[in-house]
Amino acid sequence: MADNNSEPSAEAKAGRPFPVSWDQFHRDCRALTWRLNEVGPFHAVVAITRGGLVPAAIVARELGLRVIDTVCIASYDHTSQGDLQVLKGVSADVARLGGGTGKGLLIVDDLVDTGATGRMVRQMLPDAHFATVYAKPKGKPLVDTFITEVSQDTWIHFPWDTALSYQPPIRP
Ligand SMILES: O=P(O)(O)OC[C@H]1O[C@H](OP(=O)(O)OP(=O)(O)O)[C@H](O)[C@@H]1O
Ligand code: HPA
Ligand SMILES: [Mg+2]
Image (cartoon, rainbow, N blue to C red):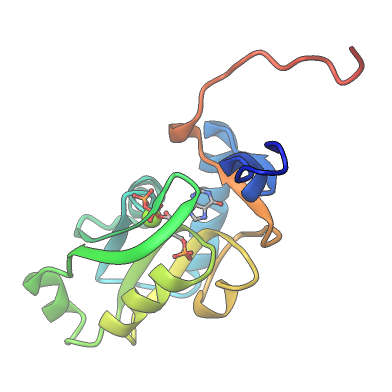
């Protein structure tokens, strides 16, 4: 935390860190796919970029899906949430596969936090199945299938955003 007169650091604002390794992420994606396998079959995967690209690749591999589209949305600059920007919507081919409402399509993202991103994609594809690997309580009602819930004051550190570094001992 910074001194009394200045803003708390981004890390402090983000609360508890929850680091996720590549191994853990892969295992959680596989667990998600086992659940999705009970719900499908799906015509195609729609990944919410960029974070959804990594689980979408793993889920698509496990479910034997080769049609993968993206919805490109940006809102966070590291831990600061800004206005949502839709940079690209669903492609015409995949929208047609989902009959215009997303029926039979699988939307994948790494997590829901406030739910703002998920809400926007649900408006585009109301009948699609929405899956995330992690969910915080505010966003959870928007998701059809997820694997791990973390508290709202937790910040998930994904392996593609982090690197191994020295940690000082708890007792100096
Ligand atoms: O539920 P919300 O509060 O909307 O937050 C969740 C979204 O935030 C992150 O994306 P971000 O906008 O950081 O872009 P990125 O995927 O490119 O990192 C994350 O990947 C989710 O898509
Ligand atoms: O907890 C989070 N971790 C990484 N990116 C995020 N975007 C929204 N919430 C998070
Ligand atoms: Mg994202």
